[in-house]
View (cartoon, rainbow, N blue to C red):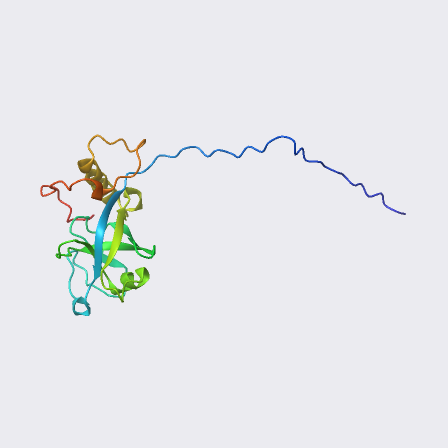
Amino acid sequence: MPQDIAFEETFEDTSAPVVPEIEPVTEIEPVYVHKGKASYYADFFHGRTTASGERFSQNRLTAASRRLPLGSRVTVTNADNGRSVEVVINDRGPYVKGRVIDLSRKAAGELGMIEDGVVNVRVEARPSDQPNRSLRHRLEQMVAALYPDRKPETEPPVTVAERPEPDLADTNLSTAE
């Protein structure tokens, strides 16, 4: 017995304009951004104790910052080639004028800066990227100290380089929970 096969034709109305869906505006997170030069640790420091108390390793994605809280996770972007790497702040420094971060050799390799040694970078610390509530709160305080009138829900991310840095001498940034 032959089976009847039904064919269903559908036609799309192409006369009506296609309106793309509009995504809702999401809340813009405040971001601590620091622009400057990055360098990387000499091999001499491999195995030495960092400010966080752990041993420094050239083979881990870590960095030193004078301002950011120990334990913070930050994204470092090489301004020359656009490559980025996420590192954990586990030490203090650099102590050379104009430098904002010292990287492990592994992090420097990810950024493609081994040959150059020192490159221009953008360091971004987002409260939501932090491993615990204490670090999130400290970064939010840093942004609030820089921009007391800022409303995070309505304004774009902040850039530290746009304004002079405040004196954070009374702010305890060295302990992480």
